[in-house]
Image (tube, rainbow, N blue to C red; front, top):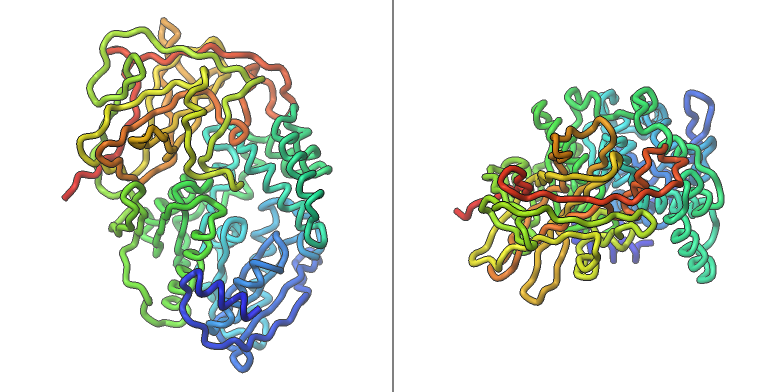
Length: 544
């Protein structure tokens, strides 16, 4: 393992180890208030078992990458508690996503405080679900919890389950497959890997969606079924609304995320809530998607720096502003005082003949396309859990008849866009239940069209107000971005009605998400005339 930690430290540019001599005690049962035992491993430097304690609680087992992370922390002087969440990694009970993490997390912290080796100082660390378990206890922690490092995660579990009021289908099913894989022993053989891929492909196209979990994993998932059936059930989601009291949080938090991460909008909402309450929080946004090694390395470096300040009472090893951002296109890092930084909003209007321009549109007929859920508009790249996410060439997607494309002329000077992005579309549809998807791309001089950010909104009866013409203005919130469109490049906006399987396709009939099977095609119109100024609103930062 020391060879692995040496390699990981080198690749991740992590500060040097204090020791390689690490002791490990495995499978310690920690009893929860309801009698359930959670298996827990303790790592500590030999002869240094009184340092601050870092807690990592995971549903993905305690081997491989998580054991590596625990050793990396321990080699730098910390004690580490690595625990398998309820119903995973040999721990008792049944895994019910998010539901038990507050009780189990607080009970685990209380158990640590009772141990003879406890130093009086705690921190919590880990990405994704390992970050969510931190948010579960963050607003009512023991006084000993001095810091949190919660990369690529959010307290708003409902928000990232239903982006745009649709359902995050692909990421959810891939996560179910990941959890199911943790229950199997040994490395899967090639035949098993190929079978798993076929099962995933079948599951992503399965209708009704209530049968997709069984298609992917061979078993029914209770919490997946709840997520499909209880999108509007406030009573169901209230116990896991970990963002409800963020303003009262007193634990210093450091956040790392990526422009293509599925948690990004929710995580930035968490950041805004903490800043509005004047809490100690900082933010790093890099060029990553959820599974990029780069975000893992940055998360470890960032956590060690943060813990050094808040647990070891030493100055930060890296002097930096509160917010650090990677600017795409320019491929540089910048530091700003706050997110979002000061900008001016510029409307780029949709025009006839596929033109995108800041000037107001002239009289023109609307553009039209048909969305057919039996041949859904595919998702290409973007904010996905799987490897297919991130920036991708969109030219094949843009040739589809169900995708409208609006492009600017080649820029005569660089254009820097940084901050939240929205689109205002004036639309008409033959269906009351329908979706609109908007994507912003950077078109290179070669013609390659690369996605930067996007967003989708799901409409239903009563959620949109139409004029006498039947036209309605809908607002689509895209993922935020920080990007320089270089001179000679073009801006491009795509408009369509889906990105499947990233978002569950809208079948058009208004049936319940879990049971819907009847498909209805939608004839869509995008209006762009002086009375219907469809546009994308870009936050432009001027050079200076």
